[in-house]
Amino acid sequence: MELGQVCAIVTGGASGLGAATAQYIREKGGKVCLFDRDSARGTEFAAEIGASFAEVDVTDEASVLAGIAQAKAAMGAINTVVNCAGIATGERVVGREGPHRLETFARTININLIGSFNVLRLAAAEMAQNPGPERGVIVNTASIAAFDGQKGQAAYAASKGGIAGMTLPLARDLAAQGIRVCSIAPGIFATPMMKGLPEEVQDSLAAEVTFPKRLGDPAEYARLAGFIISCGYMNGEVIRLDGALRMR
Image 1 (spheres, rainbow, N blue to C red):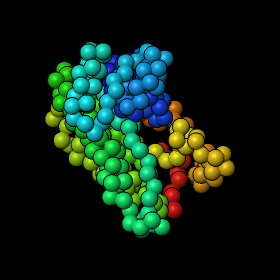
Image 2: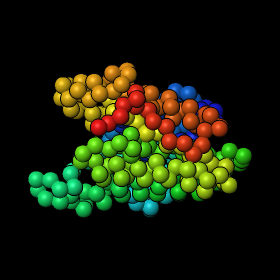
Image 3: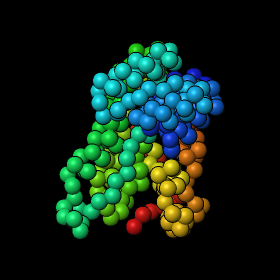
Image 4: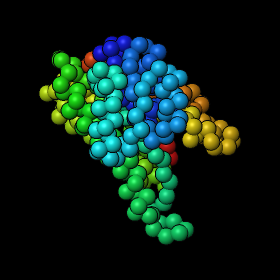
């Protein structure tokens, strides 16, 4: 699919990886509807890049359906989803305050994994109505934590492991509808959350990367997402984007 033909929903599109992806697609001539809970930032950024915005809770079916209807009205069609909405949590199974809070684990799974599935399943039903043979592309965001999560990352790693694990079954399920599915597993990226850490902490994290010894640029994630969208033979794959970082 040519990027100029893209009509994309980008979740978590108001900041970080989602914002970079939305901007990249717009620069290449595609249409974008941002899904985010931050209505102030989402509205502002959408106006800045010439996109539309829908305030959406990815974990809520009615909210996602309303967002999809809004996106289709704004763009005329939906043929791409890039799922970037998510949260990062850190909590040990048994810590100083006792056992891992179940609500923290459940919330992480609900937003990162179930939220991504909720959006893609409903959007895929819409994409299936597009003319073929290729009717749509879905790009999900996993993490290298899915494969080598660190201490305190049980919930986060489980949520991202779920993203990685469902990639191939999704691709197989949606093949009949002409929809491709891939996932990107980023390493440590210079997102707003990461930039909020002290500079020495960022430098320490960057030093762990094999090469180049720096944090990832969200624009690099965006370009990889763009390649997946435009390369018709990319399907069912989880791609690490991490500078060869292997977390210990």
